[in-house]
Length: 366
Ligand code: SAH
Ligand code: SF4
Image (tube, rainbow, N blue to C red; front, side):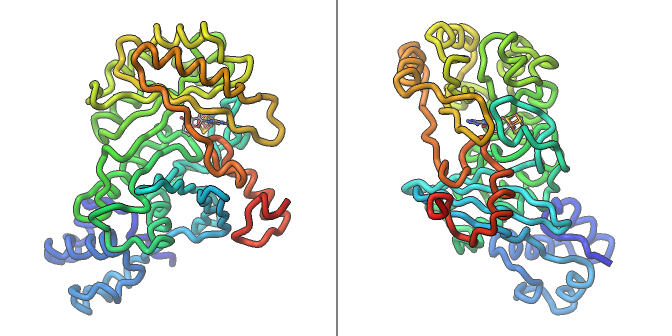
C-alpha cells in the first residue's frame, strides 16, 4: 500500500492524525518544525522526537518531494526544473535570481483548461490539478537545490513566489490555499504574504475568497481593454467580462495604495499596443489602486503573434507613467530555455524527446 505524503497536510489534518493516535499536541510543533523549518527528508532526522513516534510516522507516512526530471540553466541564471510527481505526471517550476533575492514561479495545474491565444501552456489540455503537496513540493525542491534549510532569517534565494507557472490557480483554489498556508506558516518556511503574488486570468467568483482567505497580492491578466478583443485573447472573458472583472478588483479585500493590484498586459504587435489602447487602459482602472506590468510577448513555436517593438512598448509605458502609475516592463528571463511567461511545458517534452543531456541550455544545444 502507498503511504500518504506528510508534506502538504495542513496543521489541522496533522493534528487530527495525532489526536486519533493519542499523541500529545506539542509534538505537532516539533514535527512541523523538522519538515518545514529544517526540511528533513526522513523521519530519523527528527532528533527531539522519540524513536517510537518516529517509527509511528514512518509506518503511516512518507516525506516525499517531486523529483527533478530535467534541469536547465539559462545564460541569465534563470533555472527551470521539470518536476516529476509520484504518478509520473510532470510540471515546470522556474527560479529567477536577482541580486539579493529570487523569485520562484510556481505551477498550480498540469496544463490549463483555459485557452488564452498567446499562451503556450494554453495549447495543452488540462491533465489534472496539482495537490497541495505538489505545490509546496516545488518550493521545497528549490530550497533543496540552494541548500536553503533551515529557513534563513536574512536574504534568501527563494524569497518570493509568483503563482504564474502552468495553470489557473483560482481553478485549483483549495489546494493552492492549503499549500500557500503551509508556505506562509511562521513556524516553517515562513514566507510573508507580501512576498507572494497570485496571478489569475480573471476567475471573478473566486477573487474575493482569495483575498479574504489568503490575503496574497493579486495580479490580473488583463491584456485587452475592450471585451471584443479580450473575448478572443482570453476566452474566459466571455464568461466574466471586463466590467465584472474590474468590479472584483475594486472589491479585492485589502487593496489600497500600499497594496496595489498588478495588471498584467502582454504587448502584442498590432493587436493591443496603440496609444489609444494605453489611454483606454487608464480610463478602465482609474479608481483602482494599481500598477501595470507590461510583458513583452514571449514567442513559442507555432504562434502567429509577435512582440511589439521596443519603441512601441516604451511609448505605451510612458503614457501610463505620465498618468502617475508604475509601469515596469517585465524583462524576459530565461527565454533561451523557454522558461519565460507563457512558454512552459511542451518545450521540455520536446527537449527530452531529443535526448539532450540534463543541464544543457537550448543555446548550448544549438
Ligand atoms: N493562469 C494564470 C497564471 C499563469 S500565466 C494567468 O493567466 O494569469 C502568467 C502570466 O503570463 C499571465 O499574465 C499570462 O497572461 C502571461 N503569459 C502567457 N503567455 C505569455 C506569453 N507567451 N508571453 C508573455 N506573457 C504570457
Ligand atoms: Fe491558462 Fe494563464 Fe495560459 Fe491563460 S495565460 S492559458 S489562464 S496559464
